[in-house]
Image (cartoon, rainbow, N blue to C red):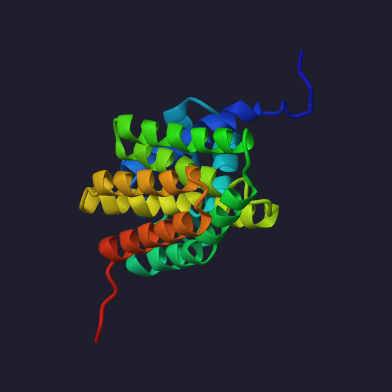
Length: 221
């Protein structure tokens, strides 16, 4: 039977394409600056162009791809300016969000928060590629601020997560440093679990600042 009403594409197809493109970008399978053609991606993932189009819109909103009137959709290119913009906002907001999370979190809520963060670190240690490690790293940081008590602050930081993951993947591809950063993560979590909000916030600030300045050092005249 035919009908003139379009059949809705299940949201799972869009999510499938979104996850697949995100993974391909973070592993470098889709390279910075590479054009993303809807028909080619649809054929690659075995779907119609509609979920591809919706997934690309979402990824443009999170900063992994760029939509241009003249160039179409391309993979976001990471450079020092982009990295410092993203990490500057994180430095301003994320340590304070963690401090508030520690301040607000009391047992048994705290146990669930820190268990989620610890599980993300375990996933990062067991990751088989940069994309899995970067996404686990993203989940770890999300666990640190998601219970801060300010939904707007959470949304702002969530909106940066894909761009931060892209920056870390690009940095690790140039100079793998995740082992040292994993130790810093454990120290941040230890202080949070101990209820030391200011100490955890300082450790997080130093961790984020140290990473971006190591990976994308600013040039001095």
